[in-house]
Length: 147
Image (cartoon, rainbow, N blue to C red; front, side):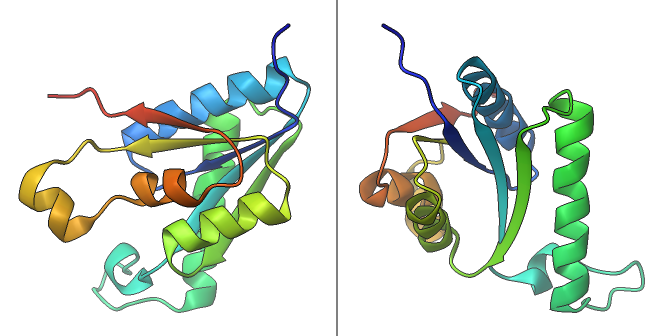
């Protein structure tokens, strides 16, 4: 008997690999008739969001922009699955993802990893790795297969 996932959480960092993870997440959610939660965590909006003139935008504008990008992902990349919710949070990415998974009683987390190794992994760490360690449910990791 196949397992049905009623709540599938998928963090999106707007990389191509995270969009691929979202496609898997949508597939699992749709198969079970469940809810897909697309999540973006603003952990340092100064490095993520700039206006064209180079000035940093406010948290509210950063949140609105991230939400618009999630909605765009929902409609243009995932076929506008009706049971998709877009969530923008602020905080440490892995903490926010794990907390949200607990709060929403997620059945599955589908997370992308960039597959960094060596010094890049030591310096940047891995959100996916931390999510795996602390998640309250199974985690599917979608690895970046680009060269």
